[in-house]
Image (cartoon, rainbow, N blue to C red):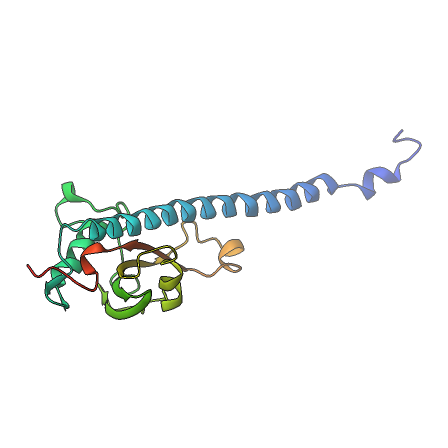
Length: 201
């Protein structure tokens, strides 16, 4: 065949190498993307779970949200934060473990609302751990969560802001997707002890 078509040898020289280079580049991009998205999703699930754990702790009523009638108990907020971030001792890791929040870019925001006749009557907070963000949960979000609730109730909102720094940080991916990637999660739960008629301890 080569003797009849000698030009094929020179025309197709290096073609397989070029095809391999193109395919390898696409496969590398897909591989990097899969790794980055997988790690991001894993951390996102951890953040969502941590926000829920914190909201569940606040909703459980173990710490009263008020120190006296309609006066906020700061221990209520810090108790929720301890559940989320843990304390300094390694054996008391929080729900965020192994994620560590950066006090210059990340934040935990806790707010609770007193609702009377289905309308938000008062807002307590937002309490911010690191004061790097403002609450992104609107009154409309809170009101939407009240559908079917009693006319007089209360709602607790726990938000977590986190900057995800790309694991591989390769230009083929980081040039398209911002680094860090801002992540915001929140949980909304009822807070019976913050109803319009709180019990004074």
